[in-house]
Length: 80
Image 1 (cartoon, rainbow, N blue to C red):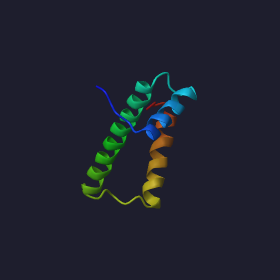
Image 2: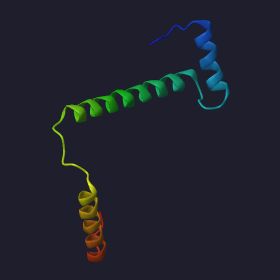
Image 3: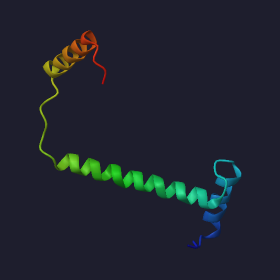
Image 4: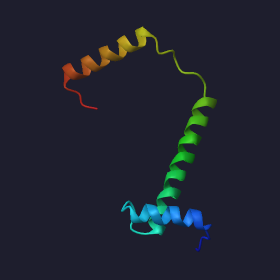
């Protein structure tokens, strides 16, 4: 695959490589693609969460019950 970039973008990529963050321009582009994949995955998870049914309310009683479960697990020697 070949990618054509305007001079300003090519200079930017070259600068990133020259700063030592990446060994080659291909490594830089691969990293950008990975980050974009992660961003799209996170976006999908957020949209799925937003479309899902509401969960129970996280009120003070919820957190107290959670603390009680953690204390009981610590007392019983249970590891997560």
